[in-house]
Length: 238
Image (cartoon, rainbow, N blue to C red; front, side, top):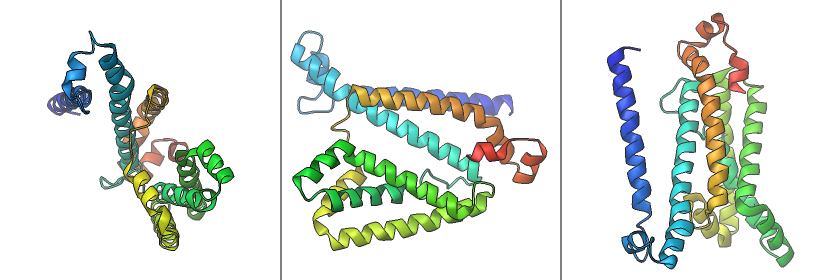
């Protein structure tokens, strides 16, 4: 990479970090009392609790969620050699929505089932649905050896599972609002424990992506070239 291009990349990255830090500070001032709680946090225990226990974890959680999604998108773009690739190409988003719809449909009617839903959580149902969708994509693609087949299988799985979710919401209109609320997302329940989990996941995924960067760079030259260089394409796709 030329020195001038590398310098621009570094400066752009630093600018994004500064902008992210500024948005974090801005998030500390969002609320019914505005920046008054943030400015008076040193002297007022109530304001300190509002900023430290409510605003800061919610803002940091949203920042970490965006960082994880951005990292997943960058890796997907390198894997599929397509700048339009996003983290949901393997059907994971449709599977997550379907998992939430099924959880609300089958376990949201009685008190006992409601306790089961609370124990698993809609996030847990979404995770199971997304993992099932990815496994189905891998099954249809017969593994991870061919990128194009994997991409096409993911698109098919996403469309089919999305249609199933729409069918469920049409048949049970009472769960439509809950599904829409979950899909739009909410940081109202994000606390320090959730931030710790996301920060740990982000750190591990960053290290893994950094280790896979040479393989992704080689894959950008084409699968045949990357294979001739002896790069572990199968392990990288997995």
